Amino acid sequence: MIYPTISDLTKNGDFNRYEIALATAKCARMITSEYVEQREEAERSMTGNKETDKPLHALIDREVIDEKAVKLAIGRIHNGEYTIVHKEPVEEEEPVEVEPIDREAELARIAETLRGEDDEDED
Image (cartoon, rainbow, N blue to C red; front, side, top):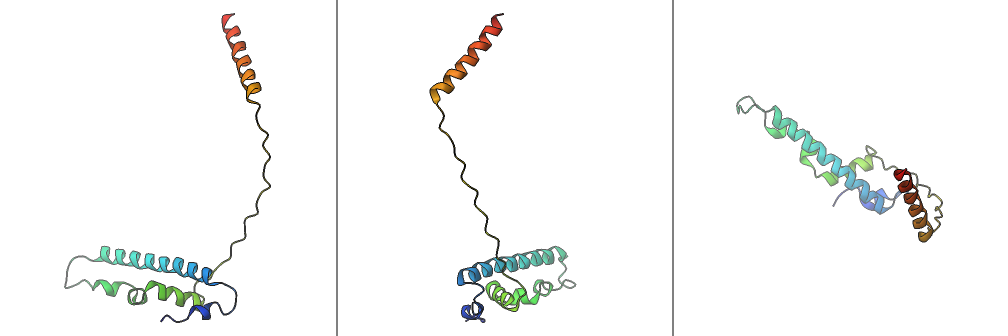
């Protein structure tokens, strides 16, 4: 079982379970990205010499390599290392009224414009 529990995290009433779950998932993704970056950096730094190279796991942050990402994320949220931020709701704009187009009048206007261009070409 993971400590702290969901009831411990929602005890203050600031956040609901859904917000905690989303924040935990995002934080766990960031921790996994940290691990991947550290592993890639460690692999690049290795020269291929078994005698002088340190083991791969020694070059990666011990906390990230030993614990699961979700467990670390919950711990970091509980300790305040990561905070959940409420975004301001986006205000909805008033709907714009659109008048229907009189198709016949619009087609007649376009036809008249085209006839006027043909008359100018003949001059």
